[in-house]
Length: 320
Image 1 (cartoon, rainbow, N blue to C red):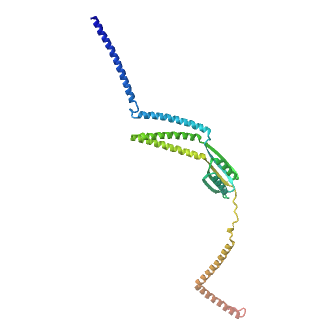
Image 2 (cartoon, one colour):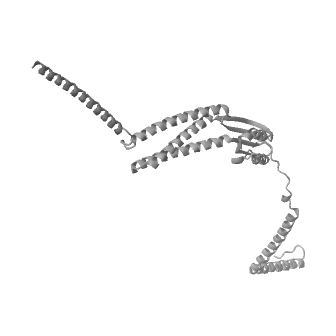
Image 3 (cartoon, rainbow, N blue to C red):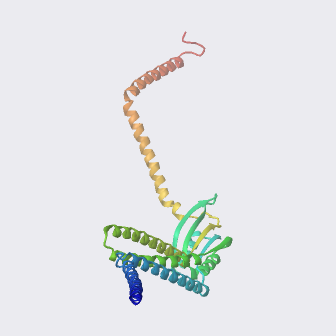
């Protein structure tokens, strides 16, 4: 009996040990299955591609940042090795013997140097009517100094001369870096637009793409402006003519023979007009002249008759 009891206890103990081991194994298998399910649920496919896109964006942003930093460093190294970008501006005030000849000289120098006139105006001042004017020109930077020297050489006196330079190298390098960064964003947005499936996503990407492209055009416009300003220097020249205008003898104003003919014809016309006026007066006033002539004739006859009577009488005797 005692042996039977020990056998039963032993069987129970073995059963408990096997049950615990089996339960532990099932728990481990359940945990493993739950882990595998969690891993499957966290994949980009289970999340509808959102995680994949987010990872791609993070990787792309990191690559873009690294690329931009590398390019900025490269631009900085290039900047130290290349020439600076400087915008040159000059103001020149000179006196000249002839305004017109100096203007022709400036035009010749501009034509030979591929420059051009931006603005030109002239006016007269003083009692001698001296000509003054201001000319603004654009000249290639490599011809800048030689052009100034040529203009000064053609003048009688340099009244004022000033040259200024604006260094825009750092601004231009910054614009280049910004342009490359915006172009990278543009490429990425174009790629997203190709993969977009929803209309809302497509509209949002299109709006962002339009804003980025507008910024790219603005940056390019500013870069072109700086390049033009650097390539072509601006020179403003104020010209003052210092000669006195002496009136010359103009033979055209003499015209002796023509004026003689004119005076002769004026005299003839005056005589003709006088004769015409006399004839008009005589014929037109004929009735009055006849009456006046008759009265005058009677008076003359009376005066003559009285004289004859006085001559026939002795001296000292009167008509009374």
